[in-house]
Each structure stands twice: as C-alpha cells, then as structure tokens.
Image (tube, rainbow, N blue to C red):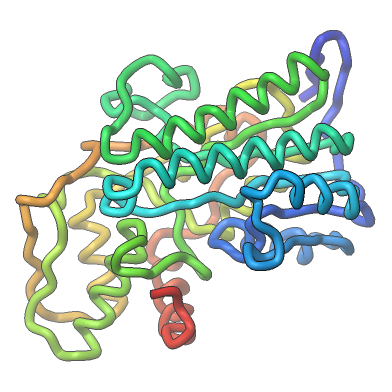
Length: 327
C-alpha cells in the first residue's frame, strides 16, 4: 500500500535489519514478544530499557536516551495496564502515567527524526455499546466503558498524537489496536491482571491445591476475543512492512468466546476438575468486544495460534516461571 501524507509519498517495505530498533516496554507481554519476533526476523540492533533503567514518565531522561540511541524505528508498547479492579481503583494513575509515557516517547521520537513509529493502543478505546464486530470507524462515536475510561482516554490521545504527527510533519507513523492479549511475561498478579492471566492463576492454584471450587467475577456471559502475544508481534512487524495509513488498525483473530467458555478451557488445560461458580455481584464490563479485522486481513495478515494451543503454551510458561512472577 502506497499512501501520501501531505503530499509526501511513502511506500512500506522491508525494514533495515541493521538499523537501531527501539522497543519501549521491551520486557512486558507485548514488548517482549515483539523483541523475540524482531530478533527471529534478523534485526541485529534491537534496544530497550527497563523501567528501573529509564522512567518513561521522565521527559528529560527519555529525550536523552532517544538522542543517544538514535533509533530508526520505534514501537511504543510501554504502558501502565491492569484489569477491571485496577482500572476502577486507580483511574488517575492509568490516565496520568500513560499520557506522560506516550507524550514523552512520541515527542522524543519526533525530535530525533524517527522514521517509522508504531503506537500500540487497546480495544477499550471503542464505545461500550459499539456495533459488533467493532470497526475502526467506531472510534469516538459513543460512551466508553466506565470501568476503564481513564485508560481508554489515554490511549485515544496516543492515536490522535500519532495522526497529528502524520498531518503536521508528514511522517509515516501508524497505530494498532490489539484485542485482549495473553502469553509469556503477562501480569499474573491477583490485583493487577487482566481476565485471562487472572483465570490461569486462579485455576492452576486450585488444581495444585485440590480445591473443589473456583469463583469468578460476573456472570460469565460477556464475549471476548483473545490473541496470543506472539501473533500480535508478528502482526506488528507485518504492519510496519506492509501498511501505511492514518487510521488505527484493529489486530485480533476475528472470533470471540464467552468468559465461561474460556474459563472451561483453562480449567481443562490446568487439570482443574472441580466446580466453577460465578459471583454475579461483581461487574461484567462490556457485554461483547469483538474487533473487525478486515483492514488487517486486507493488508495480508491473519492470526496463526489457536486459543487451545495458546492456552497450553501460556499455562506451561506460567508454571515454569511462577516463582518469579509479579505479585
């Protein structure tokens, strides 16, 4: 796909494998998967810093790092993330931290002439009651899910920031909106995790302890789409090399399951044979969230890891690393 930004034509193509490629958030769920994919794809100079080494909320430090490394490509995968409980309890943190991270990294990338930037958002940017499957055009057409609206607003700001750079400076920066992701290096904390890693931990602990029951939040009826982080990473590289356009691109599988169905899958994979109960006094969140991935498919990419395979791989990784996980 060849597009023009303010009269400047850019044709996506194979990225320079010898160029410096900065992955912000390189140790997180998505960032670590992107690093694995880039290295497997022959990129020789993939760089990143831990949050202890570089606080992305520190504007001066971010500018200094970007000036020192001079990356040609950047993927912004760093973010403060969490599930319903964390987002509901700490909305200021999710809004403030993420806006600062995004503004600092994107401004520093612009100041240092980064050629290609991929900003990663979240499917929670879309209205709570958007038509399903959710098309990219649904952005800003309705009210957000109130349990994570602060995080969503921050991510919407990142999308608009990326689009503004395209309009004002003509740079071929793009953004992608993944569906619910899972895989190695996820946050399995009981307080801060998303639904799928929380379920994996809950069912695995129940299986190990021999518990008779597991109790989950809500009714189990909401429908969700899940994508393995390794598929997400592959999609990111594909977009960088094959797509250019101002609108955000949905990244997902194009199919969904109920929370009760995913719970049953995890129970089976972990070996839990007891009863699953549902605490209906707890919130369900958005009733359905399925992305329309037509744009991505038209760009030549589809997911390759089935949910069953992805669950088996993730549970195996969790068990191998449980002693070192975030708590």
